[in-house]
Image 1: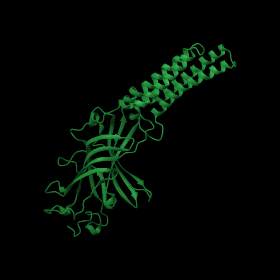
Image 2 (image 1 turned 135 degrees about the horizontal axis):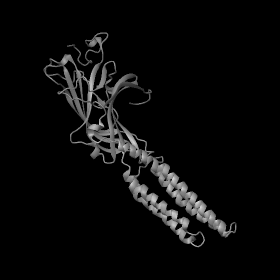
Image 3 (image 1 turned 45 degrees about the horizontal axis):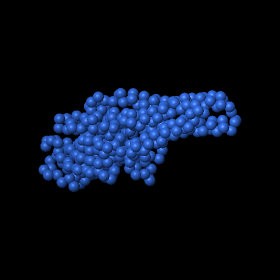
Length: 374
């Protein structure tokens, strides 16, 4: 036992180690107790997680009542949390009375920052990350080495590094999303000093069926009905034709007004926005085409037979262009999205990749500029 227990054990010569000593190995397990709202517009995910971690310190093995305010322990935190995060931490304790293996734990509940690009909405996906590090306690990789659960896995701890609570099943609770996998990785952040980090990540796909059936299908229905304008004579049925086109335009506008609350308000166009704009443009161009050819016929620039022939040809080109646009904007992306959804795990145990969800033990170094914040 050394005099100053606030230093990491056996990492520096002055802490009782040797010149070639190694960092303290701390192994983590993360259990998801709940995953709630995935707010893609404001960029956060509401979740509740139970984090526990294990390390060895022979200095405290024989202490009857350790004062953890004066003894070193890892003090991990969630670094990418929003302001609304409630953390309840229990003091460290020996796992077994006859061993030097220690355990610490905390429960965190609240919002985790999660910016997402919605350009592919409603066929979008997201990588949700939970970052655990010790940056604010100034512990670099020379003092602390963070790992998924491995060496200390046993009946007294756990056998894997990731898991779900018995009462929580993401396949049924996350109704708008499907979780594809869950994985844990090691990272290193280089920022004045090199800080170890554990990153838990899960990949989610949005259920697009709601938006396809309630919005896209109705938009396409209004557009397909507009195809019938091609069968209205531009001379004999001009008034009925323009009334019909105007009705389709107003019906589409009313539909968008009703479903506006379900659409993300972002400063760029999503796939659904492009479908909407394409539908409006198609109906609007039908009206412009009818009006323009009618004016041309009235001023005598073209006889009725030529006007009717051009009318059929232009309307056919507009219908063909709209069909091609829908193929590129909806049919192909939806087909790709459905193939991804078909590979969704059948049970919540299948969500965890490999042995305990550990897919990568190779350290990836992320270099941050001095003006960036962790």
